Length: 181
Image (cartoon, rainbow, N blue to C red; front, side, top):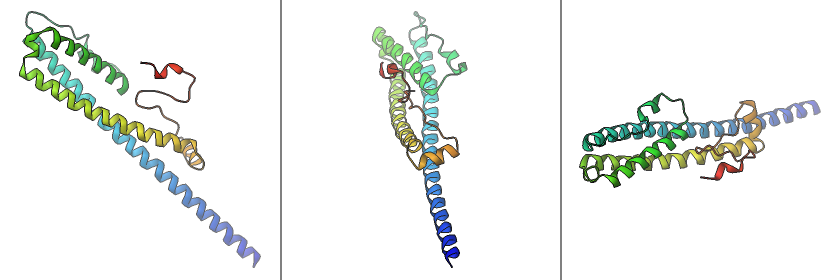
């Protein structure tokens, strides 16, 4: 009879462990899906931003006919193998250049098509900012599960590791320059 109770207790403990394992595995997978969703939104909007900047470049060169403006090889940017973070930074540099052109050339500033494209860039930037916040929120939750017991055991079984935030900041390294602009 004692053997039967021991087997029953072991079986109950095994079932409880299985339930805990399944719970944390599903939680990690849910967060992974949300991170993937944010990455898709970021990819899509960064592509839209790139395409809009290329359109703005063409419009600026049409409007400012006498002054060919160099956009520092924006056409080659798609060929480069860079992260979304680096692409976002480079596109922001181009937006800064475009804003400077808007300030320097009255004909560019007064063009309705260009103003509409700049409004489109603003809307895209809002979506990108929201997607970054969403991404970083779930990266933070994922990293928390990877660090804490018992979910860290599930994460180790599935080779899930700590990930960097969108801005590529790593809170686990010795680099204190992560947080400098």
